[in-house]
Image 1 (cartoon, rainbow, N blue to C red):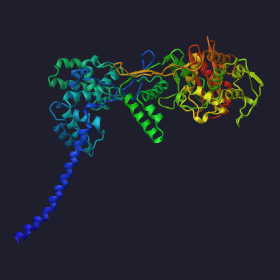
Image 2 (image 1 turned 120 degrees about the horizontal axis):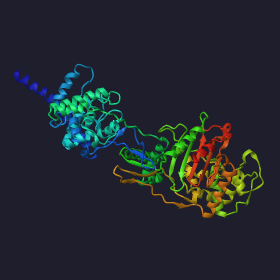
Image 3 (image 1 turned 180 degrees about the horizontal axis):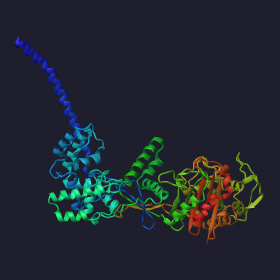
Image 4 (image 1 turned 90 degrees about the vertical axis):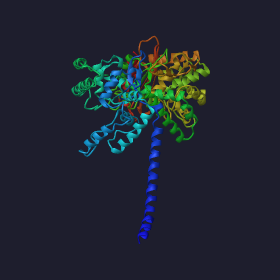
Length: 616
């Protein structure tokens, strides 16, 4: 009987043992796979901490930053030893003794948390905090805490204690959107790390323990109390003597808060957009987009480009621009003061004739950073403002007529296209100069037809009009009829060809460097001839005549040279004024974000007035 029971028991235990063995094997494999995943993810050669990028104006003065918050990187040599010591005694007194986690601190935290229904105290070491900020979330859950231990252990295997502490000081949060000790030094004291006093170092070291509670701006007294407690700890640990600690406590802490210098958001946002175009040109994304045929492939490339641009902006670059602060202020003010009408918006661009650089941009009459920037994002019909580029210059370049040569200004129909002059008026034979001065539509159609539509557009394709379509190549384009149109920056940029007959794309960015001044990106455009000297001279004469006694007259200024062309689209949906002086080329667009009739403000000449105020 005993043998039978024993044999039966053994038989029953065999499946149980097999089950336990299988489950243990699964768990061991799961843990091994998890450990392998952690090991692979902890790549100490590529520990990345974002840094704030800055934009500089033409004189090298900072006027904007390329991301929210303040993130600056400090090398280990830049961080004073006293700052390292006080941080260790503030956050993790057993830092140099543990293997990534402190068992005693964890036990104390568990005991305290048993009193509450959710985690109150974490017991995290400096290594755990670094692991959390690099690889995990800030969730207060036991599962996340356990995962954190694995990552901390792996960091301890791959990095020295000094390397861990340096990385921690570069990534930890110091309240008010500030990350890293170098950013904290600049934000709260406007100093480099080597300029900080010991009292200031201890004050900064007090913040990370509880960034909200010890916020120096809103809770200065609490931060000061913690600073003094840290100094007392240093005395107990014989890192300071009592007299020096008292002296440091007595030192006045003067907060000199960093001001986020986003002074000119219209220009800054465009510069960031241009950075993306520059990266696309230099790193092959533009060529890939040109070769891609499927929309899905293009979308993938765009996503990769966005990610790459964000990486570059988060790497602490310096974007050197051509921004002229005084002209920027004048441009923005001109747009705002001349558009008192509800719902009516505007954009303006100013380009330096000598350098062909964009020196000012207005993206709207009350532009806020990262809102719709009409200077480059508003793609609208150009109206008659396109005629110098698509009709008159190509015709003159092809035939070199005298400007007194006549062209018929009566109505016409060519292959079902029947343009009309403003008000349906007919003018008979008029000179080229007068047709241009009055901005007549029927002579424009006749001239373009004689030049040839294909040849006219060949000249237009010399410029950077990204939204011009193959289907736009019709006579309707002579008066501004396009599928989409062009942006104020694009149209103004093309008008720079009337400076001297050559064209070089205008840019806001001069170069992009790292913090050491090494050039990372720079435009490499070449200046190309578009119009002959004879054509350029005649076009400048036409533009000047229009400014003096034609449609551009309300914007006229007494300058060594001035030339203007205007444009109005169907139903008065858009007003354009584009032209140049001896120093600058400027363009203005006025309209609604969703096109509406603006005939009621036509006689106010808002686009003219903006251009005049901007160029005076």
